[in-house]
Length: 354
Image (cartoon, rainbow, N blue to C red; front, side):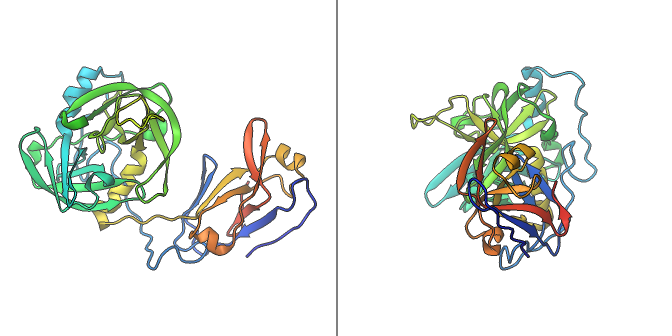
């Protein structure tokens, strides 16, 4: 399974690992992280794992044959966005043993499916949604995914009473793009706030402590009660689900202009699985990596100029069970930090990683 090559370098030994995978589905190297899409990569990922192909929610929003208004070629004003999308945003009230949790959500189809955050409905014995801030409908929890902080609800309402929001493409957004958030901060129903995309490729912590990758950072005001609501681009399409805020080091509870949204491309796939099967399956390797380059290899006498240096290995993961080893020696090359001395992955199932 592994090919070890010892060598005498400046910082000690690096081990080159050629990883064999029985059922390789895909390899994605994004932002220094390696994700291998297989059911059992390095030992069992769980007592029961099922891999199934599920079609994501349509980019235009909605399911089935529902067709929504096409996005205009020019950006909408905040007023136009609010008129178009506000009626599709709901207030979510979740009742549990500790009391009630308040959040937001938005309609995605004429069948009555609503997307919100998992942490809004976590542990709830009863969930209600309000379209007008007064009349409440009981909602069924179709399914949840703690790993991405997403939940899908369903209400029994006439199709004409539902306004599905169009879904955009979070892969095409750039820093500086104008965005709007609609939600229910502190119970103030259907509040619109505006801002820009402040940064991309952020990592935020999911309720189950796993990492949510590719999160969108925005300075649009997000507060308690906004959770689960839509982050909307200038075309009026949802590009993210507002989920978290940073309150800085003061320990405050309000917005300081640093909010985060789960990208809609992640949400689309998760919601499709929930609606289809009621649950979500994730392939999880459990490593953080950095790409090897020629300068790094020459400077520290690495045994290869290509591959992925294992930076972290998460406990309990398939990578940990397989014996992958993370580096322990931090170095900086051209302003980029690396941790070397551990494994370097040079291939997956016989395919070279360049």
